[in-house]
Length: 437
Image (cartoon, rainbow, N blue to C red):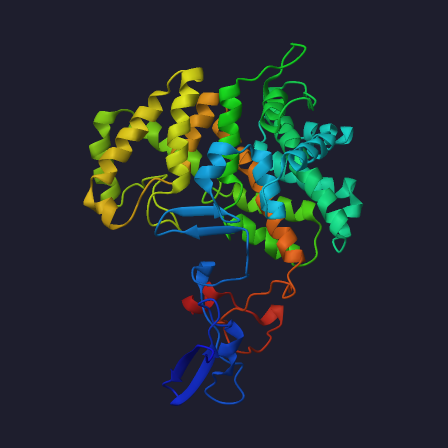
Protein backbone atom coordinates (compact mmCIF):
# COMPACT_ATOMS: atom_id res chain seq x y z
CA UNK A 1 0.00 0.00 0.00
CA UNK A 2 1.35 3.40 -0.97
CA UNK A 3 2.28 5.77 1.83
CA UNK A 4 -0.46 8.38 2.32
CA UNK A 5 0.50 11.92 1.44
CA UNK A 6 -0.91 15.41 1.73
CA UNK A 7 -0.99 17.21 -1.61
CA UNK A 8 -0.51 20.96 -1.46
CA UNK A 9 -0.98 23.43 -4.27
CA UNK A 10 0.69 26.83 -3.89
CA UNK A 11 -1.67 29.33 -5.51
CA UNK A 12 1.19 31.83 -5.83
CA UNK A 13 3.17 29.61 -8.19
CA UNK A 14 0.63 26.92 -9.16
CA UNK A 15 3.22 24.34 -8.06
CA UNK A 16 2.15 21.10 -6.39
CA UNK A 17 3.92 19.55 -3.42
CA UNK A 18 3.52 16.35 -1.43
CA UNK A 19 4.17 15.71 2.25
CA UNK A 20 4.08 12.18 3.73
CA UNK A 21 1.39 11.59 6.36
CA UNK A 22 2.32 9.57 9.43
CA UNK A 23 0.17 9.26 12.58
CA UNK A 24 -2.19 11.90 11.14
CA UNK A 25 0.65 14.42 10.99
CA UNK A 26 3.03 15.88 8.46
CA UNK A 27 6.57 16.96 9.21
CA UNK A 28 6.83 20.72 9.56
CA UNK A 29 10.15 20.53 7.69
CA UNK A 30 8.27 19.24 4.65
CA UNK A 31 6.72 22.69 4.34
CA UNK A 32 10.17 24.19 3.74
CA UNK A 33 10.13 22.93 0.16
CA UNK A 34 7.30 25.38 -0.60
CA UNK A 35 8.88 28.58 -1.93
CA UNK A 36 7.81 31.41 -4.17
CA UNK A 37 11.37 31.61 -5.48
CA UNK A 38 14.50 29.56 -4.82
CA UNK A 39 16.15 32.22 -2.64
CA UNK A 40 13.41 32.12 0.01
CA UNK A 41 13.82 30.35 3.35
CA UNK A 42 10.69 28.29 2.73
CA UNK A 43 7.22 27.99 4.23
CA UNK A 44 6.72 27.93 7.99
CA UNK A 45 3.62 26.98 9.98
CA UNK A 46 2.39 29.71 12.33
CA UNK A 47 0.77 28.42 15.52
CA UNK A 48 0.62 30.80 18.54
CA UNK A 49 0.25 28.78 21.73
CA UNK A 50 0.96 25.53 19.82
CA UNK A 51 -2.76 24.83 19.52
CA UNK A 52 -2.28 22.38 16.63
CA UNK A 53 1.41 21.52 16.69
CA UNK A 54 2.84 18.21 17.95
CA UNK A 55 6.29 18.82 19.44
CA UNK A 56 7.03 15.18 20.23
CA UNK A 57 5.83 11.62 20.19
CA UNK A 58 4.90 10.12 23.55
CA UNK A 59 3.66 6.86 25.01
CA UNK A 60 2.77 8.17 28.48
CA UNK A 61 -0.65 9.83 28.52
CA UNK A 62 -3.59 9.58 26.14
CA UNK A 63 -6.39 12.14 26.10
CA UNK A 64 -9.51 12.20 23.97
CA UNK A 65 -11.03 15.57 24.77
CA UNK A 66 -14.22 14.96 22.82
CA UNK A 67 -15.03 11.76 24.70
CA UNK A 68 -13.63 12.78 28.08
CA UNK A 69 -10.98 10.03 28.17
CA UNK A 70 -7.74 10.19 30.17
CA UNK A 71 -5.35 7.22 30.38
CA UNK A 72 -1.85 6.71 31.75
CA UNK A 73 0.01 4.11 29.64
CA UNK A 74 -3.38 2.80 28.54
CA UNK A 75 -4.94 2.52 32.01
CA UNK A 76 -8.16 4.56 32.49
CA UNK A 77 -7.77 7.27 35.11
CA UNK A 78 -10.96 6.01 36.80
CA UNK A 79 -9.42 2.57 37.47
CA UNK A 80 -6.16 4.03 38.75
CA UNK A 81 -7.91 6.50 41.09
CA UNK A 82 -10.11 3.75 42.53
CA UNK A 83 -7.50 1.05 42.99
CA UNK A 84 -4.04 2.60 43.33
CA UNK A 85 -1.99 4.70 45.66
CA UNK A 86 -0.05 7.61 44.17
CA UNK A 87 3.36 5.90 44.30
CA UNK A 88 1.98 3.04 42.16
CA UNK A 89 0.96 5.57 39.53
CA UNK A 90 4.30 7.35 39.74
CA UNK A 91 5.95 3.98 39.08
CA UNK A 92 3.60 3.40 36.14
CA UNK A 93 4.39 6.78 34.59
CA UNK A 94 8.14 6.22 34.81
CA UNK A 95 8.28 2.50 33.96
CA UNK A 96 5.30 2.01 31.65
CA UNK A 97 3.80 -0.82 33.72
CA UNK A 98 2.08 -1.09 37.08
CA UNK A 99 4.38 -2.59 39.72
CA UNK A 100 4.08 -6.05 41.21
CA UNK A 101 3.79 -6.35 45.00
CA UNK A 102 7.55 -6.73 45.43
CA UNK A 103 8.33 -3.96 42.94
CA UNK A 104 6.00 -1.57 44.74
CA UNK A 105 7.48 -2.48 48.12
CA UNK A 106 11.01 -1.83 46.85
CA UNK A 107 9.91 1.36 45.10
CA UNK A 108 8.31 2.73 48.26
CA UNK A 109 11.41 1.82 50.28
CA UNK A 110 13.61 3.65 47.79
CA UNK A 111 11.38 6.72 47.93
CA UNK A 112 11.43 6.69 51.74
CA UNK A 113 15.21 6.48 51.69
CA UNK A 114 15.43 9.88 49.95
CA UNK A 115 12.78 11.94 51.77
CA UNK A 116 15.28 13.90 53.89
CA UNK A 117 16.86 17.08 52.53
CA UNK A 118 20.17 18.64 53.47
CA UNK A 119 19.97 20.74 56.64
CA UNK A 120 21.22 23.78 54.72
CA UNK A 121 17.94 23.74 52.79
CA UNK A 122 16.22 24.75 56.03
CA UNK A 123 18.50 27.79 56.21
CA UNK A 124 17.66 28.55 52.59
CA UNK A 125 13.92 28.45 53.31
CA UNK A 126 14.45 30.55 56.45
CA UNK A 127 15.78 33.31 54.22
CA UNK A 128 12.31 33.99 52.81
CA UNK A 129 9.93 36.44 54.46
CA UNK A 130 7.19 34.85 56.55
CA UNK A 131 4.57 35.86 53.97
CA UNK A 132 6.47 34.63 50.91
CA UNK A 133 4.29 32.61 48.57
CA UNK A 134 4.86 28.87 49.17
CA UNK A 135 5.12 28.26 45.44
CA UNK A 136 7.92 30.79 45.14
CA UNK A 137 9.76 29.00 47.94
CA UNK A 138 9.20 25.63 46.27
CA UNK A 139 10.44 26.78 42.84
CA UNK A 140 13.57 28.29 44.41
CA UNK A 141 14.37 25.36 46.70
CA UNK A 142 13.92 22.78 43.92
CA UNK A 143 16.37 24.76 41.77
CA UNK A 144 18.73 24.95 44.75
CA UNK A 145 18.84 21.13 44.93
CA UNK A 146 20.87 21.26 41.72
CA UNK A 147 23.78 22.63 43.73
CA UNK A 148 23.52 19.81 46.28
CA UNK A 149 23.53 17.07 43.63
CA UNK A 150 26.07 17.96 40.93
CA UNK A 151 26.00 14.33 39.79
CA UNK A 152 22.58 15.12 38.29
CA UNK A 153 24.37 16.65 35.31
CA UNK A 154 25.37 13.16 34.15
CA UNK A 155 22.12 12.78 32.27
CA UNK A 156 23.53 10.24 29.84
CA UNK A 157 23.55 7.59 32.61
CA UNK A 158 20.26 5.72 32.95
CA UNK A 159 21.02 4.63 36.53
CA UNK A 160 21.97 8.18 37.48
CA UNK A 161 18.76 9.54 35.95
CA UNK A 162 16.76 7.05 38.02
CA UNK A 163 18.53 8.24 41.17
CA UNK A 164 17.55 11.84 40.46
CA UNK A 165 13.97 10.77 39.77
CA UNK A 166 13.81 9.07 43.16
CA UNK A 167 15.31 12.09 44.86
CA UNK A 168 12.87 14.53 43.31
CA UNK A 169 9.72 12.46 43.88
CA UNK A 170 10.84 11.89 47.48
CA UNK A 171 11.96 15.40 48.37
CA UNK A 172 9.26 17.52 46.72
CA UNK A 173 6.75 16.81 49.55
CA UNK A 174 9.42 17.66 52.13
CA UNK A 175 10.17 20.99 50.44
CA UNK A 176 6.45 21.70 50.09
CA UNK A 177 5.87 21.01 53.79
CA UNK A 178 8.82 23.25 54.72
CA UNK A 179 7.30 26.07 52.67
CA UNK A 180 3.94 25.53 54.39
CA UNK A 181 5.35 25.52 57.93
CA UNK A 182 7.62 28.49 57.23
CA UNK A 183 4.53 30.54 56.37
CA UNK A 184 3.05 29.62 59.77
CA UNK A 185 6.25 30.21 61.74
CA UNK A 186 6.37 26.57 62.81
CA UNK A 187 9.49 24.39 63.17
CA UNK A 188 10.05 21.96 60.34
CA UNK A 189 8.85 18.39 60.88
CA UNK A 190 11.09 15.59 59.64
CA UNK A 191 9.76 12.78 57.42
CA UNK A 192 8.48 9.61 59.05
CA UNK A 193 9.39 6.76 56.75
CA UNK A 194 7.02 4.32 58.41
CA UNK A 195 4.13 6.21 56.81
CA UNK A 196 2.79 6.10 53.27
CA UNK A 197 3.66 8.87 50.81
CA UNK A 198 0.55 10.96 51.50
CA UNK A 199 0.48 10.16 55.24
CA UNK A 200 4.10 11.27 55.51
CA UNK A 201 3.30 14.52 53.71
CA UNK A 202 0.43 15.18 56.13
CA UNK A 203 2.77 14.40 59.01
CA UNK A 204 5.27 17.01 57.83
CA UNK A 205 2.47 19.54 57.38
CA UNK A 206 0.52 19.17 60.60
CA UNK A 207 2.60 17.39 63.26
CA UNK A 208 2.83 19.38 66.48
CA UNK A 209 4.08 17.94 69.79
CA UNK A 210 2.70 14.40 69.53
CA UNK A 211 5.25 11.59 69.35
CA UNK A 212 3.74 10.30 66.11
CA UNK A 213 1.27 12.01 63.83
CA UNK A 214 -1.80 9.93 63.01
CA UNK A 215 -3.55 10.95 59.82
CA UNK A 216 -7.13 10.35 58.80
CA UNK A 217 -7.24 7.37 56.40
CA UNK A 218 -10.03 9.10 54.47
CA UNK A 219 -8.02 12.29 53.97
CA UNK A 220 -4.87 10.35 53.11
CA UNK A 221 -6.82 8.40 50.47
CA UNK A 222 -8.34 11.64 49.15
CA UNK A 223 -4.85 13.10 48.73
CA UNK A 224 -3.76 9.91 46.94
CA UNK A 225 -6.66 10.30 44.52
CA UNK A 226 -5.99 13.99 43.95
CA UNK A 227 -2.29 13.28 43.40
CA UNK A 228 -3.14 10.54 40.87
CA UNK A 229 -5.48 12.84 38.95
CA UNK A 230 -2.83 15.57 38.77
CA UNK A 231 0.16 13.33 38.01
CA UNK A 232 0.25 13.93 34.25
CA UNK A 233 -1.80 15.57 31.56
CA UNK A 234 0.09 15.27 28.29
CA UNK A 235 1.81 18.33 26.74
CA UNK A 236 0.47 21.09 28.96
CA UNK A 237 2.38 24.32 29.60
CA UNK A 238 4.54 23.02 32.47
CA UNK A 239 5.30 19.64 30.86
CA UNK A 240 6.27 21.36 27.61
CA UNK A 241 8.50 23.63 29.70
CA UNK A 242 10.12 20.57 31.30
CA UNK A 243 10.87 19.14 27.88
CA UNK A 244 12.07 22.46 26.45
CA UNK A 245 14.52 23.15 29.28
CA UNK A 246 15.68 19.53 29.35
CA UNK A 247 16.36 19.63 25.61
CA UNK A 248 19.34 21.85 26.45
CA UNK A 249 20.71 18.98 28.61
CA UNK A 250 19.91 20.88 31.80
CA UNK A 251 19.83 18.78 34.96
CA UNK A 252 16.39 17.62 36.18
CA UNK A 253 16.34 19.92 39.22
CA UNK A 254 16.52 23.16 37.27
CA UNK A 255 14.20 21.70 34.62
CA UNK A 256 11.67 20.78 37.33
CA UNK A 257 12.03 24.25 38.83
CA UNK A 258 11.29 25.74 35.40
CA UNK A 259 8.24 23.49 35.00
CA UNK A 260 7.10 24.53 38.47
CA UNK A 261 7.51 28.16 37.44
CA UNK A 262 5.16 27.55 34.51
CA UNK A 263 2.71 25.85 36.86
CA UNK A 264 2.92 28.89 39.16
CA UNK A 265 1.07 30.93 36.53
CA UNK A 266 -2.60 31.58 37.37
CA UNK A 267 -3.70 30.34 33.94
CA UNK A 268 -2.18 26.93 34.66
CA UNK A 269 -1.82 25.88 38.29
CA UNK A 270 -3.79 28.64 39.96
CA UNK A 271 -7.21 27.99 38.48
CA UNK A 272 -8.67 26.20 41.51
CA UNK A 273 -7.85 29.20 43.69
CA UNK A 274 -9.77 31.37 41.21
CA UNK A 275 -12.78 29.05 41.59
CA UNK A 276 -12.89 29.70 45.35
CA UNK A 277 -12.67 33.44 44.75
CA UNK A 278 -15.57 33.16 42.31
CA UNK A 279 -17.70 31.19 44.77
CA UNK A 280 -16.96 33.78 47.47
CA UNK A 281 -18.08 36.49 45.07
CA UNK A 282 -21.34 34.67 44.27
CA UNK A 283 -22.01 34.18 47.96
CA UNK A 284 -25.24 32.18 47.85
CA UNK A 285 -27.37 30.12 45.48
CA UNK A 286 -29.88 32.93 44.98
CA UNK A 287 -27.15 35.00 43.31
CA UNK A 288 -26.24 32.33 40.74
CA UNK A 289 -28.72 33.39 37.99
CA UNK A 290 -27.43 36.96 38.10
CA UNK A 291 -23.83 35.72 37.97
CA UNK A 292 -24.63 33.45 35.01
CA UNK A 293 -26.09 36.44 33.16
CA UNK A 294 -22.90 38.42 33.83
CA UNK A 295 -20.86 35.52 32.43
CA UNK A 296 -22.95 35.45 29.25
CA UNK A 297 -22.60 39.23 28.95
CA UNK A 298 -18.81 38.89 29.05
CA UNK A 299 -18.47 40.79 32.34
CA UNK A 300 -16.94 37.90 34.34
CA UNK A 301 -15.56 34.42 33.66
CA UNK A 302 -17.02 31.14 34.87
CA UNK A 303 -13.88 29.73 36.49
CA UNK A 304 -13.37 25.96 36.56
CA UNK A 305 -15.45 25.44 33.41
CA UNK A 306 -14.05 24.59 30.00
CA UNK A 307 -10.64 23.23 29.06
CA UNK A 308 -8.19 23.63 26.19
CA UNK A 309 -8.38 19.86 25.58
CA UNK A 310 -11.68 18.60 26.98
CA UNK A 311 -14.84 19.36 25.02
CA UNK A 312 -16.93 17.20 27.34
CA UNK A 313 -16.95 16.53 31.09
CA UNK A 314 -13.39 16.37 32.45
CA UNK A 315 -13.13 12.78 33.80
CA UNK A 316 -11.00 14.04 36.70
CA UNK A 317 -13.75 16.43 37.80
CA UNK A 318 -16.25 13.57 38.00
CA UNK A 319 -13.92 11.59 40.27
CA UNK A 320 -13.18 14.57 42.51
CA UNK A 321 -16.89 15.28 42.88
CA UNK A 322 -17.29 11.82 44.42
CA UNK A 323 -14.25 12.20 46.68
CA UNK A 324 -15.60 15.48 48.05
CA UNK A 325 -18.45 13.83 49.92
CA UNK A 326 -16.06 11.39 51.61
CA UNK A 327 -13.79 14.24 52.70
CA UNK A 328 -16.65 16.26 54.12
CA UNK A 329 -17.70 13.35 56.33
CA UNK A 330 -14.41 13.92 58.15
CA UNK A 331 -13.95 17.68 57.90
CA UNK A 332 -17.57 18.79 58.02
CA UNK A 333 -19.47 19.88 54.96
CA UNK A 334 -18.30 23.04 53.25
CA UNK A 335 -21.16 25.28 52.09
CA UNK A 336 -19.10 25.93 48.97
CA UNK A 337 -19.65 22.40 47.68
CA UNK A 338 -23.41 22.87 47.62
CA UNK A 339 -22.97 26.24 45.95
CA UNK A 340 -20.62 24.69 43.38
CA UNK A 341 -23.00 21.82 42.62
CA UNK A 342 -25.91 24.22 42.16
CA UNK A 343 -23.78 26.42 39.91
CA UNK A 344 -22.85 23.36 37.86
CA UNK A 345 -26.49 22.25 37.61
CA UNK A 346 -27.72 25.64 36.42
CA UNK A 347 -24.84 26.10 33.96
CA UNK A 348 -25.26 22.64 32.39
CA UNK A 349 -28.95 23.31 31.83
CA UNK A 350 -28.14 26.49 29.91
CA UNK A 351 -27.70 26.17 26.12
CA UNK A 352 -25.08 28.95 26.23
CA UNK A 353 -22.61 26.67 28.04
CA UNK A 354 -23.72 23.38 26.46
CA UNK A 355 -23.29 24.69 22.91
CA UNK A 356 -19.83 25.97 23.79
CA UNK A 357 -18.97 22.61 25.40
CA UNK A 358 -18.10 24.26 28.70
CA UNK A 359 -18.12 21.58 31.38
CA UNK A 360 -16.50 21.46 34.84
CA UNK A 361 -12.78 20.70 34.82
CA UNK A 362 -10.49 19.32 37.53
CA UNK A 363 -10.09 22.74 39.16
CA UNK A 364 -13.80 23.25 39.82
CA UNK A 365 -13.93 20.96 42.87
CA UNK A 366 -10.29 20.39 43.89
CA UNK A 367 -9.85 23.75 45.63
CA UNK A 368 -12.97 23.19 47.74
CA UNK A 369 -11.56 19.87 48.96
CA UNK A 370 -8.11 21.31 49.67
CA UNK A 371 -9.64 24.16 51.64
CA UNK A 372 -11.77 21.75 53.68
CA UNK A 373 -8.64 19.74 54.50
CA UNK A 374 -6.98 22.82 55.99
CA UNK A 375 -4.93 24.21 53.11
CA UNK A 376 -4.89 27.90 52.35
CA UNK A 377 -5.31 28.87 48.68
CA UNK A 378 -1.62 29.78 48.36
CA UNK A 379 -0.77 26.10 48.83
CA UNK A 380 -3.02 24.82 46.04
CA UNK A 381 -0.43 25.13 43.28
CA UNK A 382 2.18 23.50 45.52
CA UNK A 383 -0.19 20.57 45.96
CA UNK A 384 -0.43 20.41 42.17
CA UNK A 385 3.36 20.41 41.76
CA UNK A 386 3.97 17.46 44.11
CA UNK A 387 2.26 14.79 41.98
CA UNK A 388 2.99 16.46 38.65
CA UNK A 389 6.70 15.95 39.38
CA UNK A 390 6.40 12.26 38.47
CA UNK A 391 4.74 13.20 35.17
CA UNK A 392 7.42 15.78 34.40
CA UNK A 393 10.14 13.23 35.13
CA UNK A 394 8.44 10.60 32.96
CA UNK A 395 8.52 13.04 30.05
CA UNK A 396 12.13 13.92 30.87
CA UNK A 397 13.11 10.25 30.74
CA UNK A 398 11.19 9.78 27.48
CA UNK A 399 12.98 12.79 26.00
CA UNK A 400 16.39 11.45 27.06
CA UNK A 401 15.67 8.21 25.16
CA UNK A 402 14.20 9.89 22.07
CA UNK A 403 16.49 9.38 19.04
CA UNK A 404 14.99 12.55 17.51
CA UNK A 405 15.83 14.71 20.54
CA UNK A 406 17.10 18.14 19.59
CA UNK A 407 17.39 21.37 21.52
CA UNK A 408 14.08 23.23 21.32
CA UNK A 409 14.34 26.27 19.09
CA UNK A 410 11.04 27.49 17.60
CA UNK A 411 11.04 29.74 14.56
CA UNK A 412 9.48 33.18 14.48
CA UNK A 413 7.81 35.35 11.87
CA UNK A 414 9.73 38.64 11.89
CA UNK A 415 7.55 41.71 11.36
CA UNK A 416 9.99 44.41 12.44
CA UNK A 417 11.70 47.10 10.33
CA UNK A 418 14.19 46.39 7.54
CA UNK A 419 17.82 47.47 7.94
CA UNK A 420 18.09 50.98 9.40
CA UNK A 421 20.91 53.51 9.39
CA UNK A 422 22.63 54.02 12.74
CA UNK A 423 22.32 57.56 14.16
CA UNK A 424 24.82 58.85 16.80
CA UNK A 425 23.19 59.69 20.11
CA UNK A 426 23.82 63.43 19.87
CA UNK A 427 21.91 63.57 16.56
CA UNK A 428 18.87 61.54 17.60
CA UNK A 429 15.47 63.08 18.14
CA UNK A 430 12.91 61.35 20.31
CA UNK A 431 9.81 60.00 18.57
CA UNK A 432 7.61 62.45 20.47
CA UNK A 433 9.76 65.40 19.36
CA UNK A 434 9.72 64.22 15.73
CA UNK A 435 5.95 64.03 15.82
CA UNK A 436 5.76 67.53 17.34
CA UNK A 437 8.01 69.00 14.64
